[in-house]
Image (cartoon, rainbow, N blue to C red):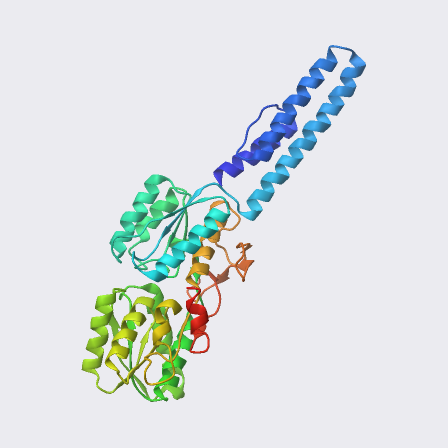
Length: 399
């Protein structure tokens, strides 16, 4: 952003004072400077021939400089409005080895590189806030233009993100949010209430409207999972149609396959009358699906999963553990974070409610920043999408 402001100011100064050879960060401005130098040289040569020619050439030179400078300003403004930049934009996912996070990173990189920037994806060595803080501090020292983070803890990253902001680095979040004061805007895969409603209705449907269910989540500090679970609880308490359902436990697999497997086994042992497990995490649902299907369990599963990982478990018969599930496209979520990062860094948006910006080829573009339930702001990618036997094969080829 600083480079673009300097570029515009230099170009405007060139137009006013007819300064030749004034450089900037854009090709158009450099071209205008070159044209100004040539025009000025021609004017000097003409002045040595006659005063009449001097007047004519001076007028022509002024027009040439003014025209070239105007085009340079237009070019610079156009670059700012489209968000094109040659900066460095960083993504800090929740953890390494998580297929959902990897696809987010793919989308982020695609978006940034499409806009002419350099994408840096730095995974923490563990799915913890402390590991993410180490990564963020390293990125601050590198002087990146923006940091997008999928937070492992809503509060613990505060000091590190404030340091980034103080260093002039644009900060946004995706997938899992932090405190509003610590970032400009949250890239939300779908509305919290919409996700909670979809999951609660799935539990109601699959259970037959009554019985015990459990939730297998990621970490106990994961802000996105916690928000969705809270929404499920509020929805269940607000409508009598859920009154015959009993939530027996919220278990945490920490987004680790083995721990999620162990937690699923523990739920089956502790609750022999369990009817449904809802897992709002791609790692947890894949682990639970395998346990239930391998054991031929009567317990059914729903939640949020990747089609490519859940294809063999999706079915509406006794041989499949998961009748249906939901998700969104993590590649598109990563792209949204990439376009948002660039728009924040170049000043197209600040994160304020009502601002709009273009986001490349994403279906929802242009996006409008809206207020969320906490009074902060967010950009919602879209609605949760249902995957069932009718479409799982098709989507498993996509992601």
